[in-house]
Length: 183
Image (cartoon, rainbow, N blue to C red; front, side, top):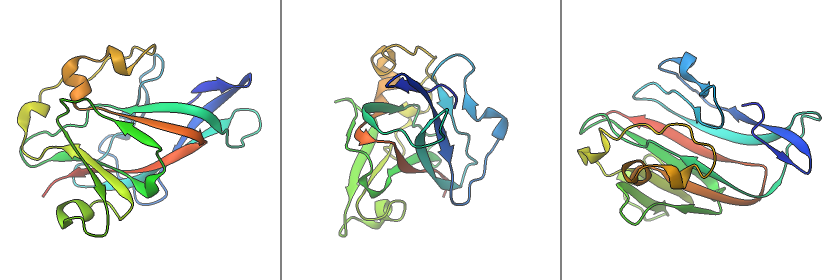
């Protein structure tokens, strides 16, 4: 994604790669929304992949380490009782994450003793985030519109309930697994 930001006067891009198997439902839907900062990755139901997000200096092609940044994952929902989106923050590459007090997401740190309904999706030392299985309040939440300034706070209450805000410090990127679960 070109022109993701600027650091110390130098513009940088956000490079998103999937080092393992990635299957799109419709790859034409991948990328920026054409306006500002709202990006999208389209994934086929029943599949998942690890995605690496890395900030790259436009001139040198080298990673850019930012002192602090936030990244919002929006629209974590489900299409029915069975199919739901699952995000796994792998290797704890994210310093902190925030959900609303009235979130409709289940957030579970995965440790060695975590039940298999979480650890089947996320390895040890990661965080499992997904809509509460079967909670159909997440089905009809409108997708957010692009509003770059203060993105998270300008979401509707229902949109914030199915979003997670990631916070990172002294980092050039992070990794996460994204799965659309379909039993």
